Length: 103
Image 1: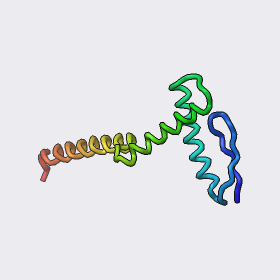
Image 2 (image 1 turned 90 degrees about the vertical axis):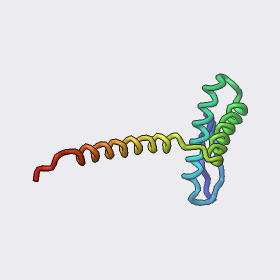
Image 3 (image 1 turned 120 degrees about the vertical axis):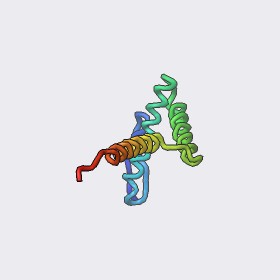
Image 4 (image 1 turned 180 degrees about the vertical axis):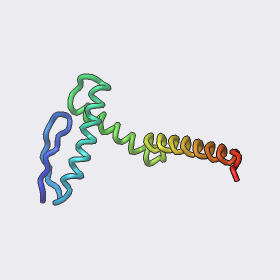
């Protein structure tokens, strides 16, 4: 068994985990910590338990959206950019097809 130290909401926690799971738990704790900071900004000063509850609810809301098939904002932006590039390429191709050839 390995031991990992996690920082969430300004507090440090030590947990036991399987060997090799430390980086994954650290990444998850980092996500929870970011949501805890977001929660703190949303509600201002509140007790730690409420802040972590709100952080958990924010994460659960994101998970619910993903499970329901809600589009990922980054993927949606990428899709829009690809559509714009495709339209530009088609426009350039049309322009080149209409140019007279020098034969």
